[in-house]
Every structure is written in C-alpha cells, then in structure tokens.
Length: 118
Image 1 (cartoon, rainbow, N blue to C red):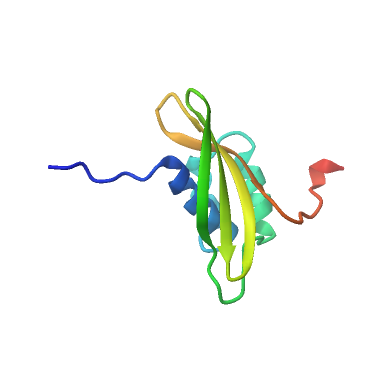
Image 2 (image 1 turned 180 degrees about the vertical axis):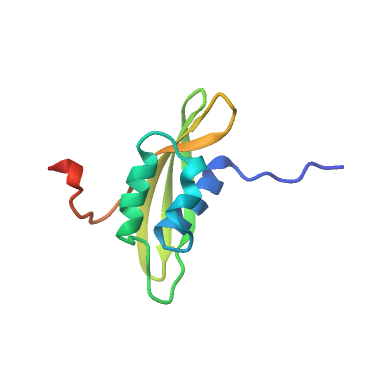
C-alpha cells in the first residue's frame, strides 16, 4: 500500500504563517511551532495585519527553499491576495525532538518601524 503524501515542512509552515499574518488564526496557534525570537516577531507582525485584504483570502502562490545545513531550512514564498503580491521569508530548524520550528520570519514590502529598531 503506498504511503500517503506528507507535505513538506516548508509548505505547512508557509500556510500556518499566512493564516496568522492574515488574521485567520490567532498568533498563539504558533506557540509550539516557533523558537527564539520568532514568536515575538510574528506577534509584532500579526498585530499590524500585513496580509489582511478586503474580500480576498491570501494564499501561498509559490514557495522555494534552501537547505542551509543539517536541520536548517531557509524558505521564501510569494503570497497573493487579489492583485497584491507580497514576499515572505522564514527559517525552520529541526530540534532534538525532530520537530521543525520557525526561528525567523520576515515580510517584504513596506514595514512600520519596530520599537527595537530605535
């Protein structure tokens, strides 16, 4: 019997991040899926609703990744909502428990100043 197709971690995390950044899921849904400063950065970004679009649900249009080393993947995605297109980059690292966690997330495009940048 063939093994069911398991989605790549990059695809799963891209969808989760888009759901949080568009307001479809709460930020705390990512608590067990982030490590380091990634949760704080994600919460800061989500608060500003960068992927919220009126009447159009954002979707991952394209995704790519680079294996930065053993247990580390850097990914990029094109996020579309209607005629808007945004870029998203994120890093995944596999822990000792063999679970993937997001350790960094960034969005392309205009970004309001972050308090830590002062």
